[in-house]
Length: 188
Ligand SMILES: [Zn+2]
Image (cartoon, rainbow, N blue to C red; front, top):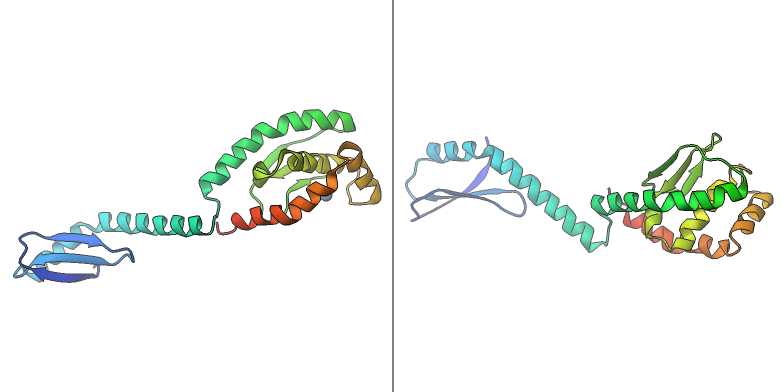
């Protein structure tokens, strides 16, 4: 049985509405039997569920907007952007470094910008779609250099610098602006 607040008045018909907090309120004619009102409310159960769900989603969206959070739609769009941005960058830098690349994936991650497995499978954070092109390019170079050096040694950074002389500004960007991007993806 669905709980509802009953408001009786001189009206002739029944009406049902769902308040912003999800509670149901029924307006009913003054002398209509309670059993008839209950039946009416029961018959509207599907509609009530749907409406409550929609209201909850709207509230969540409004909260996300207020905090400047990325919506699932934003994240999807970033993933698509990355899928188009990555191949030219990989084609530009992998042969120059003399490395091959396995599977390339794009994911939403809250802790890392990219990764490279020992088999050469690369993964990139879709949030990089929101970063300046030079930062994305740096991350691509960084992961490709891991095909040669699976560590962050001096040798590794020398390789990175060879392909990306200004890499330090990208590292700094990721630590400050990048962290903000990750926090905007936080809730979901
Ligand atoms: Zn690394």
